[in-house]
Image (tube, rainbow, N blue to C red; front, side):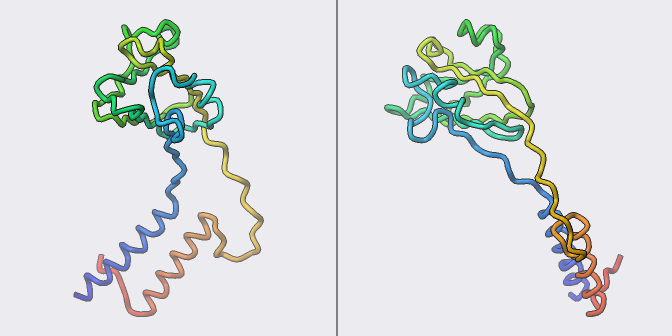
Length: 178
């Protein structure tokens, strides 16, 4: 039982330090904005009226809703296409079919580039098309000068905290049995 408790404490420390290092800055963008009830024909120019006011970064998600005026999950669709097919509203050479039939489709923006999306079934000609430019995340702000404490919020500071916690555990008699 004591060995299990020691291992649990060590695993908890490792997981805690790992979680501190994970970035959680991806954003979910509801296409058209929440106040416009999603993806529908003749509603807006999705690129100039909505996307031009958003910032898209690598790792962000696009989220399409089909609920205006009623759920239209079988009627509307979303395809990623190239620029030529975007301009001609063609689904002849789609890159990816995002539609899954649930009325709420998502797509992760994994690369820094311009993406082109259209709806099939002729709805592209009714304004259901979108262009987004995705950029790399801006660099993190410069780290503030350290006051000399080993417990600053930097990676070395996190390691120092983990090391100090390990020393406390050792002094308390908690030793890993590896």
